[in-house]
Image (cartoon, rainbow, N blue to C red; front, side):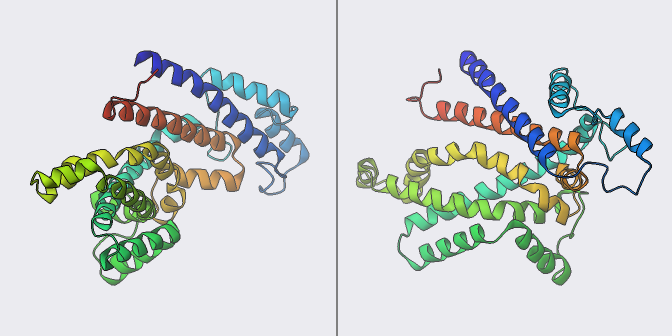
Length: 305
């Protein structure tokens, strides 16, 4: 197991270097600069600002300087949030985004897996078609549209839940649901397909012939043997839920990394863009590693080498 983890960590290093390189080149190839939106300043002041942040040097020199800084564990200062390092911003905001992502994962699994099992058990029924319709709607509707609808219904119309901010468990419900509803539709369809394959297996017919009750068959035999495809997608799904919270955080005024990332892109804050992108790349690598380990634990036939 330790050998497998070390090998995956080493394989993740080139991935992170590639992500950092591509992000760096894209930022510098896009026309404009981080200080172009400021009020008109004398050329001498602009030159001093660019010299302070090494923006007056050629792009290859800037790239090598940033990678050297990255190897030392430094993400650099923010161009727009004066006096704050990117590391400090990420340290303050990442727990919020991560908590929102985990809440969305609970929504995805809590809605998607039961819906998929119900749909598969009553295949071709009205209930089955209704679940597929709702799942398709969840996949089709963007999270920010669903978020706006939830705010209008549950906050402004019924006054059940707060419309914004991040001050307690009640504030987590609407953004977590808006973020996870679309993914739950995808998981429901995936669960349905997997459960249908298991229900047609010989050992399920044998279990019914032995007189086992349907709840025992569904939860002890069907669910356990149909969960592998769901586990396989949980790595990128979890990372997608955390990274997909950018717009949701902006809509619900949540003080997570998403709001800073959006303002960083708007203001061309290069170090902050690089820092947030690398954090999410690391998260994807770790999530895929954890999923592979869980998959090996669930299925003894899978060997981790």
